[in-house]
Length: 120
Image 1 (tube, rainbow, N blue to C red):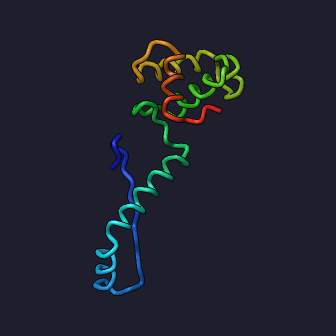
Image 2 (image 1 turned 120 degrees about the vertical axis):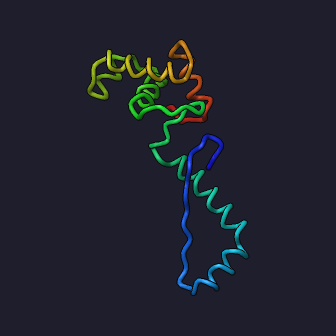
């Protein structure tokens, strides 16, 4: 479990008998824990499902709309790109702002950028 409550699990297996495997696992316990933590971090960075901004989970659509806004696109342009209406874009951006506890789109974009998220 990381600081934001996200859970990851890694399973290690071997073709050795259980007692042998347990001895090896115990011997390398710290290294295995470090490998699991590093794996968790790498996967979180790579998976598109990680839609957290400032510790807040956004829906994939809220996150997507916020990223397009961060690129300087209007709701109309983003709507054309995503094939939805500008008012739907505004709806998702408003939801994202509420969840993030900010009033303006620029504040939400600033939080997105402060997370180290790739805006481009």
